[in-house]
Length: 224
Image (tube, rainbow, N blue to C red):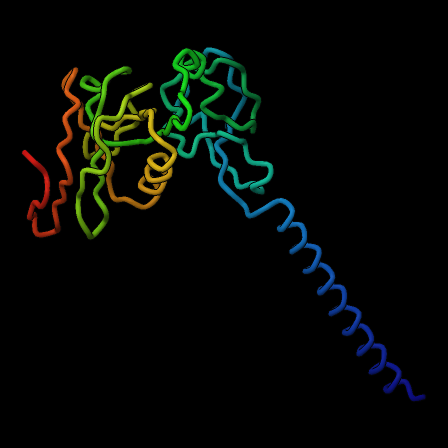
């Protein structure tokens, strides 16, 4: 066998083995992704944070990790943590969730009833008008579409000021809602243009009914 033919055979064999190895790696990666899930964002501490520290924006960072290893019950947005005090110390790179906050231990005294959930939202609203134990209406504006009264007479479990974004005050609120309402609020937080919380007067539990404003500012539904 000539050297040229031998070299060609060796090259062909190397290509076949390389393709098999690449295919095997791809299969292993696919199997690993199936086991641990897709990558998700997790809020982590940039550096070691002591217990009792009031969390600042610069204390936090986002890290992408496999879904399987993501912190259960962790904050979806860093804004939900800013301004709160840590109940425990967090090491550098450690995940930071709302259950690590002092506010979480205080809220533990407010039990949820069967079928209820505590839903966290970052919304437009006045920190002075919204208080724990008060009730609110939730108004959702969908980008390029309409503004609607989404939820009425919802109890506020916890409230705090959130970081401003240049267009007005925002709050991070924990609301007592049903499972379906919690799912809706999660979707609204991800896809809606804006969520706004309207404080209700004490003792006012009347329903305003459906109220929707289109992009032409025409109001439909509603009683008042």
